[in-house]
Image 1 (cartoon, one colour):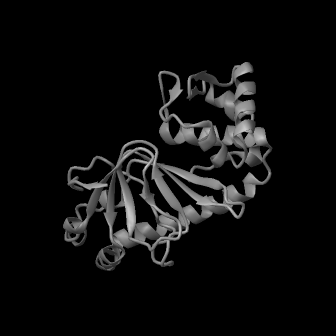
Image 2 (cartoon, helix red, strand yellow):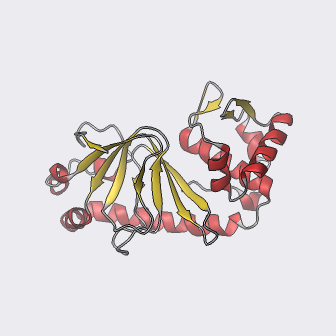
Length: 237
């Protein structure tokens, strides 16, 4: 990673919690203590079990967050995009990260060290309040997703995963704005790569999915969503 300077004042990510409170003088006092990094596609910047080094905010790019299962397999927990936080599960509670994170494409990351962020939160109560709401929302979605996930068939898991990815990154010219490997989709859907390939093939034959190389597109989101049972419908996390 190479350090660069990407200022919060000129940041366009209105969904970033730091940016949202940029007019708060207590927050501005700490902006010069932020670190920024360039992370190349495929590069890991958080290692499961490594000491916590604060929170990361995505200035520009995309990231996958994953952990190792008891069977030594990789399980993708979420995908994150511009303005979103990465590494929050370890912040303030653990001395080590319980997840790993890597860039899905060339990504610019902002990082506030743990001690800096804690000090900032103490001095900026409105920011602390928004962090509390963020954590509460994440906990609610995590519990709801875990409950619904176990009720899904393999087909529903793949459809659910594709809907999540589409809702996260959107579509342009009929294709999802993030090209993921079939393995990544499988690790997110909690199934095997072979099963993902079979489900995608079936969805293409049914006219529910289109493909161009590794690119996938969902022509009719409403019709695609109808393939899920109501109790299995995805929640964005």
